[in-house]
Image (cartoon, rainbow, N blue to C red):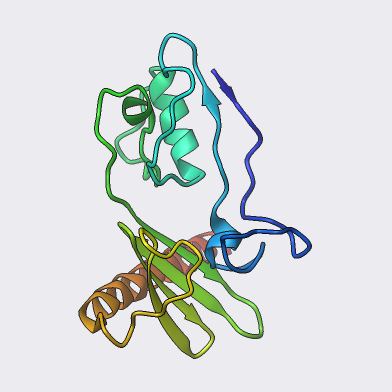
Length: 174
């Protein structure tokens, strides 16, 4: 199996990221979206293209599964095994993914669920349908308030969980 290098986010500030908006270090699509190329002769058909949404943590789960590793039941792997999807043995699956960039100004947070993405850029909340607006140009928050509220609740719960886990780890390590 061959996989190219990974990038933790998108193009540098000098990159031309069109049609995506913004750049590396943000939660906008140009800051988080990168292509993945995976080659595994005899398993993944050559030349195929998948629309499956993935995240770097999926690589750990996928490689462990491909290696036949026994994963302890108390392990909390955050990724999914992408190989059944890439091999054509399973359909693409809808995902909910979260991002957060904490810095003095402005902090950014985002959640993507299926094709919907809520971006909180400082005090501004914006909602995008990535299926029809990959460049994140048409803010639908005023017309799709139910979707925005659902995604905001998911983001809030995720942040509470992540912050609680970080606090527990800090307490254990002191």
